[in-house]
Picture (spheres, rainbow, N blue to C red):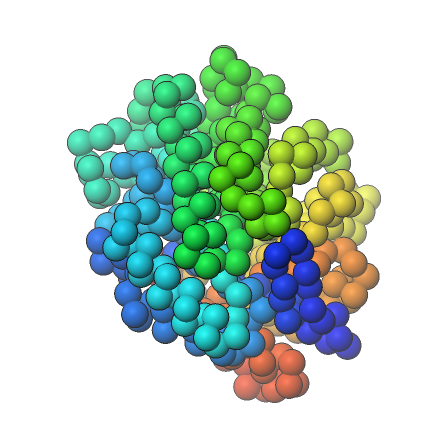
Length: 365
């Protein structure tokens, strides 16, 4: 199967990539006091040297006291942390790569007693971690508005230090997704209820980021149907519902949608072979990133138990990319294990691809 499309260039606004391979964000918790170190810079540089077209960093938290789950998760605010990220940017750029941060608020996934500021309750639209599991009072409107501004400030800082774009983490049951998900958003004001209202938090974040950055600065939104709280959860049960969900986000200013599935090869709706990224591109007309067990046979939930995963052919992936179903391919655990994964695929060195070892995983974002 031809690798021509996978290793062709990609351009979107100010973003220019040498190939279509994206490093998926994977939380590592190796940043003491939330500050990325030279080791973090070296980690990302090696993936750029290995041929990865675009690196999306591990989740890095916005400036809200309850945005993080732990003190060693990197943050994207404060002079020391931003200086650490500037070192990361410089190392990646010097290796010829491109990089953007995934900016993040964990919401009700935070366990207060294990996180900084343990005296403060965690934050969520209705204070629900999952349907029926109450952990805090609902967020006030003032808190909602301050978090929106924190996302905008993080994006502005990303552009200022030379990041090549910014990704909003709107997936996997964290704060933005908790607003999306009817099961965790039971508000009766303008931030909850209808799908349009439940999407408003993300729409306002996107608008605020666009206002805080230049018009040609790429905004990526990562979203998922599944949640860490419920692997079978779905925001949209039909293409019509997915369109209702996506259109306001697209119109607000998303440039690229990062569509997270457990397995990229699974069809999103009955009667169509399109996956989630394929449907998203069809509905919005925007470029999409597909992700979900690329290069591996098993999804990542087993990785949390330390389970290994064997390599999987990417022939079907290349077929779908060639057909234009999606535009970019995000690789997670395979790149975590093997920084040179992209170059090995390009050069046909598939016999050198390393089997993924679950023992090397911290966690995934």
